[in-house]
Amino acid sequence: MAANPDALAFLGTGDTDAYNLAAVRTKTGGTWLAGAFDLDPRSLQAIKDGALFASVSPEHFLKGALAGWLEAEHGRAGTPLPEGWLYISGLVVTSANIDGIVARQQSDASKLAWFKPQIEKATSDPGMFLRPLDQAR
Image (cartoon, rainbow, N blue to C red):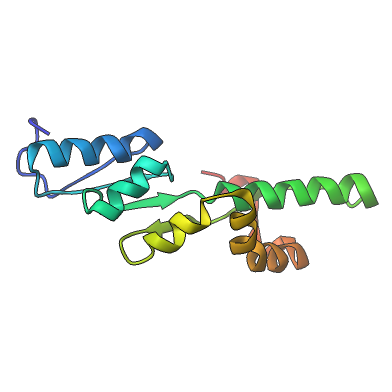
């Protein structure tokens, strides 16, 4: 922060960056925005407290559910595994949706309930989330 005292925002790229940026912003009285990635409980609390503007959830639960379903269908019915990679867009978590995301993250059961419509949609048409390998980034 000292190297960029006029910065308007800082964006962390790792899961620990979110709550650490929030802690620095709080400790220094920073007026800049802070954002990062992932859903560590400390990061979610920082969003609730206003110390972190936003965090982007990579939606690991949904990715795992879809990958697991594809593998289970392959093992159960011999359905060929698709070629490519699963593209699941991130979810921006802000003060506008933080309470719902905190509730969602409480347990595997609450995550499953929240993601169930997306899982059902994706398993009815797995190709909707598949991208060619040459588009992997």
